[in-house]
Image 1: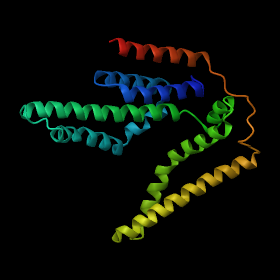
Image 2: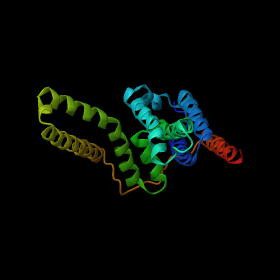
Image 3: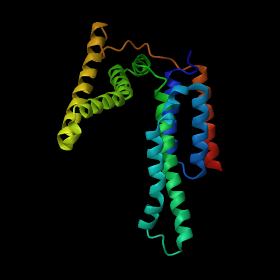
Length: 227
C-alpha cells in the first residue's frame, strides 16, 4: 500500500524540481539527503537509476567539466590551485544539480500509475491531459528497453559497418515503435470505454499524509531561505 496518494508524489516531484533549480552549494547536498531518505522509506523503485553505470558516467562527466568551464571563464590569473578549487566547486554543483533533478523526477513519478494520473487531473477537469501525461510517463519507462533492443538488432545484423545507415534505421525503428506503443495504449483505453473528453469529476482526494508531507517540505524550504 502506498503511503501517499498521487497528490503527495506529484507534490514531491514538483517541489524537488523547483528546489533543485534554485538551490546552491550546501543546499544541494541537503536536498540530495532529503531525496535519498524519501526514496529509501517511501519510493525505493525511484532509486533504480542510481544502480545504472550510465547515470554515474553522466554525473562524472558533469563533474569533470568544472575545471574546463573555470578556464573558459578566465579564472586563471590567481594560479593553478584557485583554478582547481573553483573548477571543482563548479563541477560539484553541476553534478549535484543533475543528481537532484533526476531523483526528484524518478522518486515521484515511479510511484504513479496511469490511473493515478487520470484520477488527479480528473478532479481538475483535465482528464485528457492526465491520460496523455500518464501514457508519456509509462512510455519513458519502456523507451530505454526499446532503444537497447533496436541497437542490439542492428548490431547483430552488421549494421554498424555503415554508421549513417545504422543511425537512420535506429531512429526510424525507435520512432515507429514509440508511435505503435502509444496507439496500442489508446486502443486499449477505447476498448474499456475510456473517454478523455468526459471527466466524471470524481478526482482523487489528498490524504492527511499528503498534507503532512507538504508541511515538511515547506518547512525545509523555509529553513534553507532563513539560513
